[in-house]
Length: 201
Image (cartoon, rainbow, N blue to C red; front, side):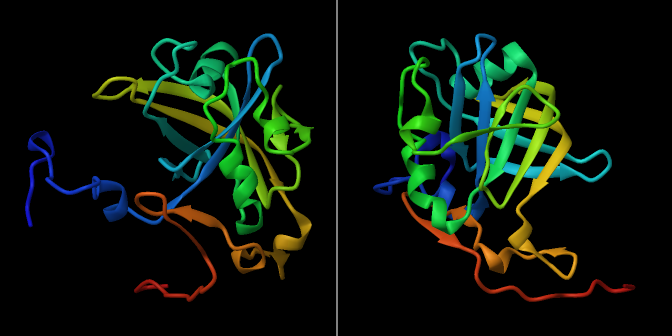
């Protein structure tokens, strides 16, 4: 099969997300200028640089009460900060609950049954019992092709690591099984890990 995205694929559902998978989930927490918390998962998320450490996520839709984007991007525009919380398998239901299309005045932490924990370096809440959280200062927001598509980049200025995820000085994902997004409504979790040494190591 071959198709041009501009012409359509002819399938019951788009295969694009299933092809580009699994994708890590950035559980993005933000706060608006008035102090209202927001929490939402994004599967267009990744780390993009080591020094200084940087991450990105992309938002691809809009809400009527936010104009051209959603709460996360709107809040980051106002405050310039956000926190990326890593999602473990055990938190899958809370993560899913926080994806509900709520009004901007509603708090997803409360909806998902999560107690917000203060960040250390930025004025933002984080998921306190997440395996890890990355406090970020926004470096740029880039408008992408297509309606309501934005990529947000941030420099990591603070890192929280849950103690039980450290084994002999290494962050061990087998201790919590990171949740990843597949296509459609499918998810997976990391359970099997193996090592490959690069040529020249």
